[in-house]
Figure (cartoon, rainbow, N blue to C red):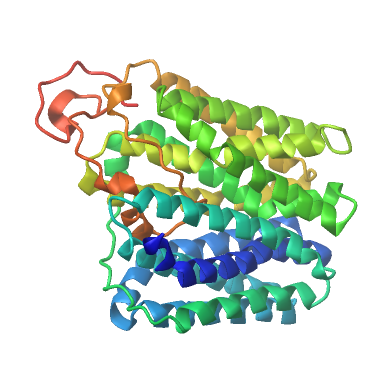
Length: 434
């Protein structure tokens, strides 16, 4: 409790910040749809949001080292405030593209500050608890943000002002804290090659998460507006997906500690496939909203499960680099998919979004089946314990994850024996990497 009291102000700021962030994630596509903007253009703006997120991942640690955590938090909260209010003031679409880039840059930077600060208060005895509470705050606040959209019509300025107020209020707990801010953080290195060598399944799972979940955040509200009869219906649609993912995180994590995690990735992919088909065919049918909850339950844990799969086969000192690569790969998937799915929604109809998810899951399911033909070198006993991860993060946040501090493994899933081993070990027969 003493350690948690030390981050109360930061968690309060996180709740306020993520409430406003949850609002804008759904509000902006809804406003664009109300203005008659095509799904193609909305998908492009969403891609720019994730481009900003990627840029933030790469640049913000250096900025924190120069001006400190509190100033960085204040600066990028102001960036998000100005971007959201400017989005309400203009209907000029090229300006929307630029402003969405800045919202992505802003939220990634704020995640970086929060997670770095939390890590400075964590130790071996409370790291997992702090991460779990942080994840709970993130998911709860983002769900609350969905319902706050209904304070006014999306065509009015009221929801934008409320979202901006939440962001502005988030500055107060951080700005008024009497606790010393953390030391500067180092820039985090990433390596797609290292991740692919360690775990091809984790590599594919991270990409799949970005393609599906990133597109859902970008275009899900557009889909919902076509088939729900009210603004409240759209927020219920989005909230059910978030709640579905939140409710199964712990049960899925518990199960994955006891079976081959590649099987869990495959099961989640197949579940996402079936749920996507159910949503695509279920408009105006009784199973429509339950199918949305199931979609969230299967799709939302893909990121955390990919991270856990990668953690099984990396050294403790490699986890930050590999975890950062998982995050960036997830973001790159989220950049590319809306650009492809948006035009399909414009050319055919809104159900093309979930049919696109289904097709993507078919491809990745085949890939996971092929990877599972070879046994894992990592045994169930060697798997690192699953830790819940927030749906979004920043690379510096991986220092907070208990898996960063796990003992080194003596195993690898590289296909060619000790050529890709983490530690020296006897050669193993060639096999397909996991």
